[in-house]
Amino acid sequence: MTRGRQLSQTNHDEAADSIDAIANKVCEKFASVMEAKIDKKLNSLECSINEKFSELQSTMSSLKKTVSSNSHTIDKLETQTERQIQYNQRSSLRFLGLEATNGTEDIVRTVLNFLQQDLKIKCDQRDLDSAYRVGRAIRVQFISNLMCNQVFNARKLMRNSKVSIFEDLTKKNYDLLKKAKEIYGIKGAWSLGGKVFIRSKDDNTKKLVLSENDL
Image (tube, rainbow, N blue to C red; front, side, top):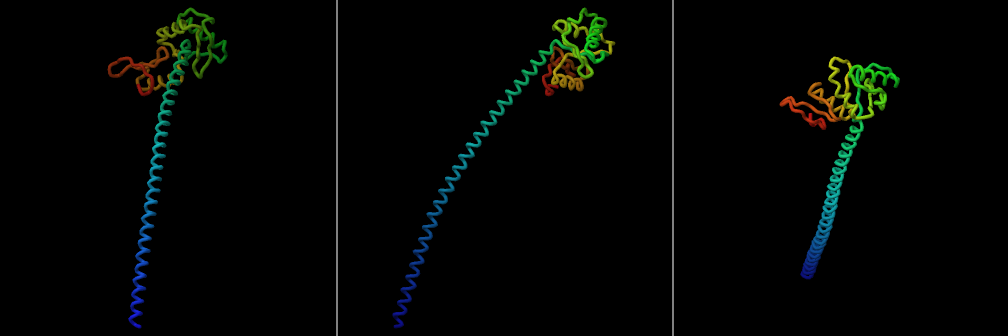
């Protein structure tokens, strides 16, 4: 009887071990299958992320090119607009130091007296398109470029005069000329034909200035 019980217990233990072995194999198989599925899913997710990232990089690169192109176009348009404005002001001059009231008639009369008496230029009111104050200066627009150039070239007669004559520059060119004079002095920077020039301190050569980078 005891022998039978021992055999029964042995069989029971062997069966339990067999079940444990089968369970372990099932678990290992399940774990292996799940690991493979998870790896596959992760690889798929990684590929998807890489693909999206690549698309994003491509989009960013395209946007940068578009922004760069638009920026270049804007700069080009601004330059063209600046040149056109300056070209439209080619027949205008600014006078600083002329004493006149703010009345249009008095300003025109003061300008004509200065042109006729100080600069010895033969002209009358028909040669002026407009004359008015802009800050402390008087802006005079002439009917013709010829008359404007004649007045501007007559500045050599004003060496001892309290009046100064300047080209009617755009704000950008005016600021550029002002900066140039701060660096190169009054005689080392000037404007001509609506363009700003400087005289190099090294070799005394004339140089066209398009931006502050040229100073």
